[in-house]
Amino acid sequence: MLFHVKMVVNLPQDMPSEVADDIKTREREYAQALQQRGTWRHLWRIAGSYANVSIFDVEDNAELHEILSGLPLFPYMAISVTPLCRHPSSIRDDDR
Ligand SMILES: O=C(O)CC1=CCC(=O)O1
Image 1 (cartoon, rainbow, N blue to C red):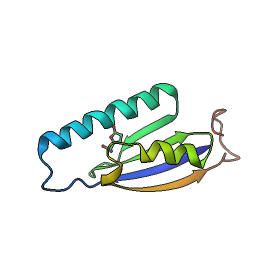
Image 2 (cartoon, protein in one colour; image 1 turned 45 degrees about the vertical axis):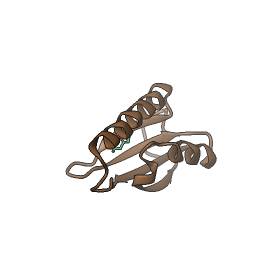
Image 3 (cartoon, rainbow, N blue to C red; image 1 turned 30 degrees about the vertical axis):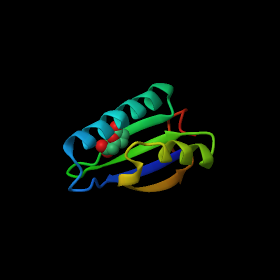
Image 4 (cartoon, rainbow, N blue to C red; image 1 turned 45 degrees about the horizontal axis):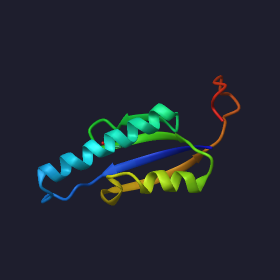
């Protein structure tokens, strides 16, 4: 199942920079491992915002929830999820 996920990051202004840097490092490692597995298919920065849009390929809603709630930045993000299905005009075989 494919999902479009928008994540808006909002770190507290008073968070010490070394704490923020540690969370961001762990977030990168977590995200890159999921990209290597093909679970996190796309990761795009939204230009001009500390936010991203992503496409996840997971078995079900529960797997997506487990992945998103495991993000090191999860406590500091507003996340919105949109389920996707194949468009009849798509020419991409892997769009399912
Ligand atoms: O910077 C972001 O948009 C938050 C984030 C998600 C995965 C990652 O590496 O950073």
